[in-house]
Amino acid sequence: MILTDNFPKLRTDLIKEIATNWKLEAKSEDVSRYFYHMNEVETIMAGSKNYVIGRKGTGKTAISEFILNKKGNDIFSEKLSFKNFPFNELYGLSNSKYTPPNQYITLWKYLIYSVICRLMLRNDNINSQVRESLSLSYTTDPITNLPVVISNWTNDNFKVPSEAIQPTNNLSWIEKVNLLEGIIKANLDQSKYYIIFDELDEDYRDIKNIEEFKPYNNLVTSLFKAVQDIKNIFRLSKLNIHPIIFLRDDIYDLIKDTDKNKWSDYKIEIDWDENKIKRLLAFRISKGISIDQQPLPFDKAWGIIFHRNPVQMGNRQTKEMHSFEFIAVSTQMRPRDFIKYIQACCEETHYYNRPFIYPETIKQVDKAFSNYLKSEVEDEIQAILPDIPQIFQVFSQIRKWNFTVSEFKDAYNKYVESGTIKETNVDFVMQTLFNFSVIGNQAKQRQSQFFRYKNKEARINFSENIVVHRGLFKSLQIL
Image (cartoon, rainbow, N blue to C red; front, side):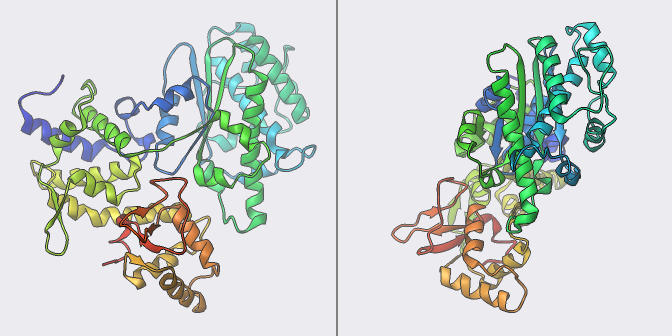
């Protein structure tokens, strides 16, 4: 245990640490200190799961950063981030011998095998002559500019390694893949090789524009099939080749392919509930005290920085709610939401040199968090509903958190008639808003509310009232 009797100083230091060093982006955070080791990570590291699916903010990038930074003499990893990637360059590299959506499978296999060859260069256990041959085509430097690397590898003049001393160029995609596959099979040791694909949503466009969406859909579908193909090729070998795809669940749901059911063997979905979130927060608060601090029970960890008084609610402030519960109802039960809210509370508390996060601070931060959540949702939905900023204005006009479907449609159609909103299919809009938990259903016979973030199997019921997510109230000026 690291805890001492000097609780006031410990608490002050902890609040400052959270305010300063908790980050929304895993890439900006100390992963070795704050990464919460979920059970799902073990199955990914073991290679039994290769498709990591989840909503934005659920921790996919944190897992990818953890794997990327995993050190060991027998662990080699490379991350291919497609953020700001010129996807049009990839679209032009399809293999005409295959029909959509399979035309990019050979390209993806070539890229995966090329990364493995680069990683083999870093491994002193690989035969020195083989590494010397590979060094004529590849370097050991981490990939920091993926567009340039892929452009070089796919250039007609790029010399592909071969079993011969000199590399070869002017080969077909299939010939290149066969050459690299042969080198890997003949020379790879039993070390673990992780090839991480992340931020693939960069070219995720308006899905209703079929001509724009189709190339992206085919490219992503081909990647899944390429990984499946590689797993089958090396299934009976002792080689530990682990390509891992991280993808948003809404994009994954749009993929339509006859092989998709087979992917479930390799797929893992990142979901969170209240108990898992509490364990995560207890871990992070404990590590905020010290990297050597053993994880505390949730109630003890929470009580170090949050005052024990409940948050008072209602017009007359007569209702009370535990501080965690108050924060939770404003979130969509994602780690990023809680990190943002608690970090903002600590910033406010540290700035005014308060000894605790008081209920008044939690309520004060609620408005800023609401604006954050609205921006997050807009970013997620933009590709499906380009009108989402204007659609949010409909809720601000209604100014109620609970209303009928007819009320929403009447208000929405006025925006369509005025030309403010272009999307005319209001049922499609409501379905999309439900899918992203902007709205839920209010059950007729009881006070229960149904949101998709609580139950992925939930479907919108157009015969029940609509309720707006609590976390969006203030940003939408809902009373």
